[in-house]
Image 1 (cartoon, rainbow, N blue to C red):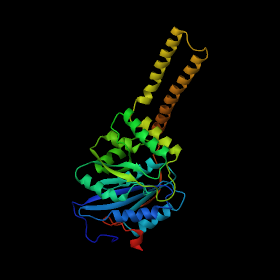
Image 2: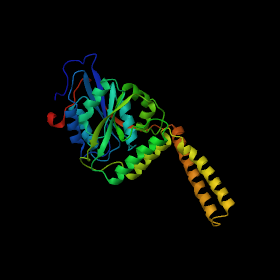
Image 3: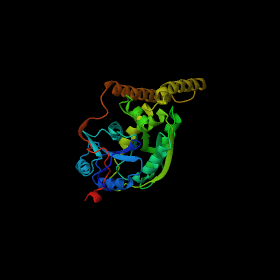
Amino acid sequence: MPASQTSPPSPTTHLISVVLPCYNEEAVLARTHDRLARALRPVEGVRYEVIYVDDGSADATWNLIRTFTRESPMVRAVRFSRNFGHQAACLGGLKEARGDAVVVIDADLQDPPEIIPEMVARWRQGWHVVSARRTARHGETAFKNLSAFAFYRLLGRISDHPVAFDTGDFRLLDREVVDTLTGLTDRELFLRGAVGWAGFPETTIEYQRDPRAAGESKYTLPKMLALSRSAFLTSGSVLPLRLPLWTGTASLAGALAMALTRRGRAGALPLALFGLESLAVGTVGEYLHAVLRQVQGRPAYVISERIRSTIPGAVLASVEEVA
């Protein structure tokens, strides 16, 4: 694949940005870059740019990314000052992207870059959002498969807006959608929830998710719980906010029933009320914490280094082809 285009792009040519959030992906990143290069073969009317976002990696991830930028002028990169999290890295990539549409894909090769051209084809048909829906998750534990299944369905039940089941952040977003998302003031943006909230026309492409090509999953249990908290508390549902009212009503009804029937041991009622009060206070406390983070006004991330491309019409080259 050539490293650049000699002729200027046509005025009707679309630029597609591909954003890859990375965190300690040294073991797989070269393979990811090569597969991406092969998948993004230039087609008539479409150009690509690739944006790597290093989310504070502690290994050689940034050195590899710097190599990619030297080998292909269409590759751009930003480096965070520390690890701010996957959602912040996705948001950072969206803000850096210049394309008419933007594809977000993880760097661990669980999501196949080969379906990006199909996403682009759907977008050119008029869809604003093209989401990749997982029909199978190979190489993952039964707990993770079950928890992911339950997460999307529970979120769909309580959410005030549509939620696409079994879809992560691997999706194509039209420029209008990107501008909407990057213009939000949420300090902890739950990207897939915000896409559903925006309400743009959406279609899906089904695929089977592969095992990680190398390394370990960066979504540890604490990070999965943190993502779930952000999804349920800040993605638009009012259910958690109403829990104290419902639990208070239920506890009063239960206390009244026990008083009328004279059942239950003397210590059962105070203990039950204490548990319900703790649950209510904890829920309100989570909301207050979310409000605190919001009003602090701190940015979602801090960029310590940025590498810009030098040739707007350049074409991605793989490591093997450059060598």
